[in-house]
Length: 210
Image (cartoon, rainbow, N blue to C red; front, side, top):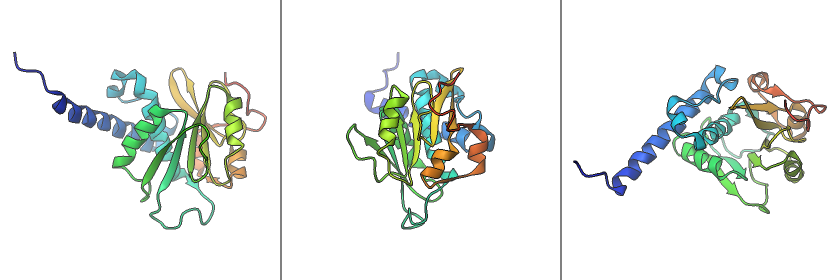
């Protein structure tokens, strides 16, 4: 019987396999029709259920930047990096960090930051917040400055004040959008993003999805 591969050999193979999974998921998000169906992971992703949703969310976060126009003067240079802050979801931070190593976004490097409770939320262009309740996310959103694309992730409702939000429907990751929240943040959203999201009005914000 041949000897088992050593740990030193296994680690690079595992890293390459994981990177292929991330790039495959990113490819789904890049497809024009994937906005409504991007959540189904490629076949390889189904072999790792614990990371499937994290891979999909990380791919979306990376892709969202191409569909947002920030206020004039947000970026000092055409190649200035896009900063994406992650609070409350280490798995998404890991997957986004892996994805950002291989892909920029419209000529800009993507710089993910893992934030801890109590950290300042300033200095980010995209801010992903995960908490157990919409109420907790709304508390955090109240401290976010203008010009930040906020993406929330909580059970049930789209938190008031969040521009985008992830939610699961029949085991598939979808996202909702509040144009009103985007306007308050001084952000202009691409029509393609809005048309493929679930629209959230001020009347619907905070109401459990069902």
